[in-house]
Amino acid sequence: MKNDLPHLNNAPNKEGNSIIESNESVAESKNASSSDQTASPIERQLKDQQSSLLKALDALKQSKHELSTERDFMRATMNALNEGVIVTNMDGVIQYSNPALHHLLHSNPEDHSNKFIGDILTLKTDESLPIDLLHIEEKAPTVEQQIAFIEQADDNKFTVEWSRSYITNGNNKRLGLVFTINDITTAYNINNQLKHQATHDTLTGLLNRNEFDKRLSNCLTSTQDNIRHSLIYIDLDKFKIVNDTCGHQAGDQLLRQLSSILSPMVRGRDTLARLGGDEFAILLEACPKSAALKVANDVLSTIQKFRFTHDHKTFDVGASMGIAHFSSGAQNENNPLSVADAACYKAKENGRNCIVEMDISTIQHQPSIPPQQMQWINRLNTALETDQFILFQQRVIPTNPGKNDYLHFEVLLRIKDDDGRLISPGAFLPAAERYGLIHKIDHWVIKNTFAWLSNNPNVLAKTHLCSINLSGLSLSDEDLTEYVTRYIKLYNIDCNKICFEITESSAIQNLSLAFEFIHNMHELGCSFSLDDFGTGMSSFSYLKQLPVNHLKIDGSFIRHIDSDPIDLAMTRSINEIGHVMGMSTMAEFVESKEILQLLSQLGVDYAQGYHIAQPAPLEELLKTLN
Image (cartoon, rainbow, N blue to C red; front, side):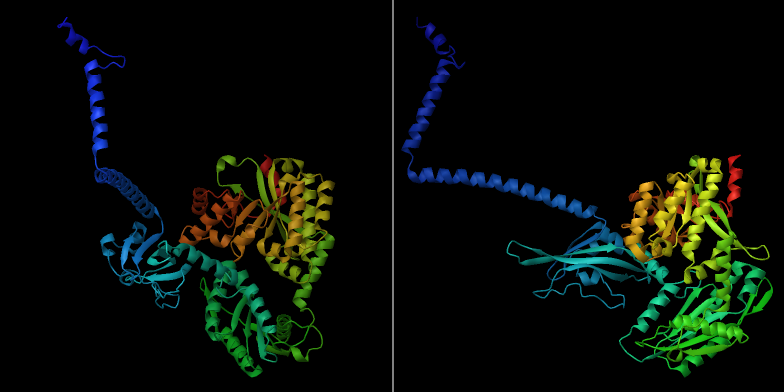
């Protein structure tokens, strides 16, 4: 029996433990309970404090780990930013700078650590004045995005957008500063180029007609009454001989050379502009008659001495000039530009190469239309009545040759003169716009294009898009919708094949009527193309408002994209914006294989220009059917 006891003591109980182990656990529990009961209150308090301290240490370790992870995350975020970041204390000593800043300044991280920010970074205004980056008076505000310039040791200057904000604690106490620096040189240069192109003539670099009109309007509405001003209108006398003898490129060269000679002859406050063709104007503000006449005589003398040489031929050019003297704030219905224009034609009648003055204050009625322009008015009215206009077209192709299955063309207009020579619209449209005939010409083009397409159904069937230009006056015509709809129905034209080309400047003449017409045509199925896009400063803002389907990039950007990086950047930007907005894009003035290849690489959808096809009569489209 005694030998069996050990065996029993090691037998398992219900929980799987031996009876002996179970008994020992019970004994330990009793001992612990007995120990707790016998421990003094101080010992129990110390034990509780020890337990709380251990828990606090564990929480501190966890917080330290989380803080380290958050710091690593923030540093990785800062390092990934494309804009430069500098963090300083309130004394301007750098605590951190990110890789984007090192790349921007061509520096290394060790160049920045614990250095004063002014020793590392110098921002300047456009007047090259240094900017105080700290300026940390008690109530100094944060600095929102501002433009500044960085000048490097190699005289390279680039443009940045910078901001400054404060690091604060929970009590809103300022602990340090954060600076962000973003390189916007390309965008800034493009913006400046847009501003320049919106106000300047692309050929000569002088101010353009729109900017001249604005300055003249400001001069007329000045609050300073009775200040005397003068406007000189200049029309070159022998320019047509150069154009006809040597071609338009030589004529353009002559205009550029003469413009560079005339520019230094006007005061800084005065305005020299090219109005168009071979016509220029000078606005002399706060200038008495005698001084204005002297300027005109000096300009005339300079033009008379000028000699233009091309292809071993030398040409002299003269000028007829008219001066209009007027006062700001004066109540007079006569426009100084029209008066100066009339005086200029009077100079032509007097034998050319001379000056005629007119004072608006002594003129009772608006001067009559000059004879040469009256001839155009008569010719245009006759052409409208007897259908002497000729419809031309210029082909448009996809930059992806695989899509070139259908016809895409822009409708153009010509007039034949008495000798059978074709006259381009640049010669007669200014007179048509000036004397209110342009909308009649637009109507003629619409009606006769639809009629031709109806009479040539095979061409219409193969046509993907037929583009027709509309002027600003036509867009402001309340009856235009009714007119277009009538002839669409009459000639049974598929509206999905018709695209109306409008310019930004024509659309904004009367936005409400333009929107209404575009909406009405969209309802029928017609599409719209925004022509000459990029030449106006407001282009991008109006692009968001105008519901157009196609974007036609202005030729002034396209001509030199193979040699001008800014033109290339502009073309790329316009193309990307157009695509983001769901529009197809087209480039005009494509004059070489290299430019066409570049446009294809950029992803521009369509191309138009002399490299692709020259303007030709509509009938030439019949040949494409074979």
